[in-house]
Image (cartoon, rainbow, N blue to C red; front, side):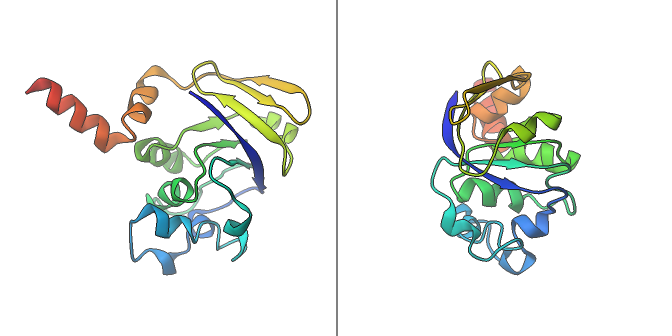
Length: 166
């Protein structure tokens, strides 16, 4: 799948409470959570985001608690994927389980700046910075994870598998 959007950058060690503060965890509705996405960093962060924009994060994005609300909030904010230097392991798994693709690219994350327009091909792992005419090749999403994403998350994947066995 090909995604194209403007980049929004965040720093290192952004925890799940910054992604979606605990005071907003009274719902699991993606749109409501999305309206408060990154409120732990800046209350007005979401006002700068448009549907399809891409988040680029520093080291250890999603550290802290294991709350599944964090990837749901990102999706609800209209962010279809996240590129990061590295991700907290439980956030990494939760993101795919909720249907949010992630690309871990290490120091190459420095090639992207706030406002750059980029495209990401999840099938090939090619990330193109259209603003700076640069391309990065990273591993594509593994086939097993791509199946989960195609079903819009682990719950959809399991439902699909169970239906095919009936």
